Length: 50
Image (tube, rainbow, N blue to C red; front, side, top):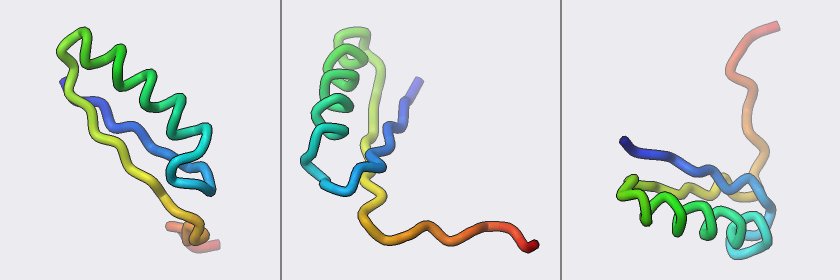
């Protein structure tokens, strides 16, 4: 199993990242593979038409 964690906070090394690192630590203890992504500060474009 692999878990993808998404940091949507405005600061790559901010509080959200700290929380994700704790989750990663717990998952690794259970031998669960993880990957962490940071979305950055750019707005996310809508993926649908209105």
